Structure formats: structure tokens, C-alpha cells
Length: 428
Image 1 (tube, rainbow, N blue to C red):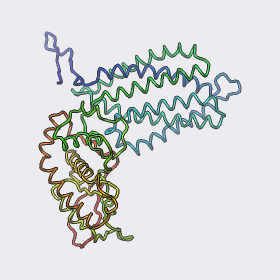
Image 2: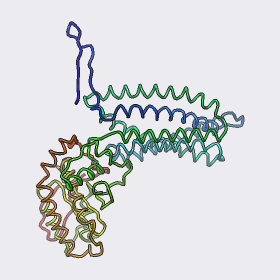
Image 3: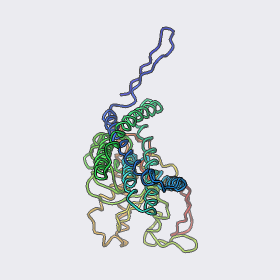
Image 4: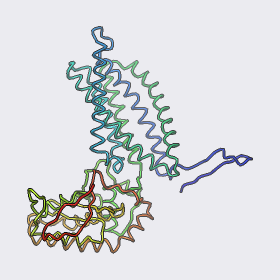
């Protein structure tokens, strides 16, 4: 429950507002764990910084300031390039998979610290390469941590006080980092030998990763990304039970293969791709013409596939030869439509999980796939409205799309008079 209390003075002027910035689900534990990880990371950072300074020649009379400056320029340039490429490649996935990328950011940062501590022991050229790699990892950490932190902050800010929450979180992190630097100053003063340095570094980084893993596990997200949708929908289809975000969080993996379909969080039964171009589906149904790009498909009546989903905001084809579900989204696909498409793909994968792949390319099997697409769509549609109500009552946010992790396309259907041919009319 969210609570807001406004306090006014005798003249009616508002002097204070007290709001709950969360719903009590894990934030206290996350605050404690976050403080511990920031403290250990600050001390480890001082050890790695000392190693970098030694590597660039601090204390060496033969070291050149110009060489150190050029190394800094190289590291900064590599980091900026890595930031651009990483954001371009994985920008769409950062919000749906914010828990995974938040922990992955700390993994990147800790590996960078290890590389920094290794640099003084290497010759000049390998040392430059190692420090450049360290800079790239820190850049990746910055992108992943910044984006995932924004999503997690929005999750905890329940009363529109996102700015206040970020300000207080930054203040808390500043205090913890300051205490870590003071403690780290004592550590680096007494830890001089390589064995002692590496022992402290491994201990601190182990604490850092363990605390971050515990903090991420303590968060119960209310949006349905691919993994959480697998757990929730499979349980609902199998047991007619709607799991809460807290229950799903206990079953959720931090690192999960992208696009896998799991039945109730156990073994992988297939893969799914959502928002794929229509051309990818057509390529499984026939051979495209080299010049025009049109597809002749005598084995599959594509119009039947379109007619099956004429009242839906998506098209679905399940390729049984590789257990792959391909979801094409229509132009007006809503978050609920995307969730329905993913649920349909999960049900199809479960039905075909135990079937023989050897005969999956035959015409009879393709016709059976069309038939099962129609049957499973009917089964999903009958109980879909009731399922959405149950999910909302369990606390799930169904108005936020979290299933697409790559840039996707939408289609606009139109009639065509060319028999047996489908023309690509996609729009981004």
C-alpha cells in the first residue's frame, strides 16, 4: 500500500510531505546489501588504482608524462567507442533484463580491477592492451549499470518521487564510498606485497559480487519479461494458478539464455523470437525469388496462417524442425497482445516438446502445425480475459511491454491478388 501524508503550518502552508517510495518488498534488505557492496568496491578500487599508477610509471624516473597522457587518451577513446557499440547492440534489452545487466555491470567492473592489478607485471605493449581492455569493461559497466539502475529506481518509486529516491540513493552511496576510501587508505598503507594485495583483492571482489547477487535476488519486479512470463504463464496453464511477483522472484534465474522457452522454470522446451520481420517466417515456408523477393510456397498456404490470426495483433509460426516459435507483431500490438503471443508460443512448444524432429519437415506435419496453431489459439483465447484479471490481482504490471529485447518490426496486412505469393510490406 502507498501512503502520502502532507504536513502544513498554521497558515496552511505545506511544510513537509511524507511518502512511501516503495511497497515494502525488499528495499530495506537491498539498502543494507548495497551499502556493503559499495564499501568493499571502494577498497578494491584503491588497490587497482595503485596498480595502474605503478603500471604507468609513477615513481619511475624514466617514465614519460606524455606517454601516460597518450595512454589515458587511448583508454578514454576505447571506452567511448565501446559505450556506443554496446548501447546500439543491447540498448533495447537493458530495461526488460535490468536485474541481469545490473549484476553483469559489477562483473565487468570487477574483471576490470583484476586486469588493472595484472598490468604492472606485464611488458609495455601488453600492459597498454590490458589497460585498454580494462577501460572497455568499465565503459560497459557504466552503460549497463546506469540503464538498469534507472529501471530499478522506477520500480521502487511508487509515488512519483523518482527524483527524491535517486537523490537520497546518491547521497547514501557517496557516504558509503567515502567511508570505503578512508578504510581503503589504511589497507593500501599496510598491504604492500603482491600476495597480500591479491588476497585482499580476491576477498573484496568476492564480497562485492556476493552482495550484488543477493541484492538483485531480493528485488521482485512487477513486469513480465521473457523469463518471468515463462514461469507465470506455464504455471497458469498447468495449474490454473497465478503466481505473485515474490513467488516468481524465488524461481527466477539472474542469467538466462535469451529467448528460451521453459515450462515452469525447468528444462528448455524451445526458443521464441518476438517482433521478427515477416521475411524470416516466410523463409521457412518457401524459397524466395532472387530478384523480386516474393515467395512461392506450395507446401503451406500462407493465407491460412494469416486467416487464423485475423482477429489477433500478431502472427505465430512454430518451426518444429528446430523448435523455434517466430512471432510477427502487427502495427497495433499492445503489451497484452505481446504477452498473449508469447503464451501461445509457450503452449505450442510444450505440445511439441516430446515429438520426433525427424518428420517435422513433411507436408502432413506442416498441416498439423497449422491445425494446432488454430486449436491452441482457441484454447488461449477462451481463458485469456480471465487470465489477465488474475495476473493484475496478483500484482503484475500488464501495461509495460518487456518481452522485446532487440529492435523489432511491425506489419500492416493488405489483400493481394497474386496466388500463392506473399509480398513484403513491412514498416519499422
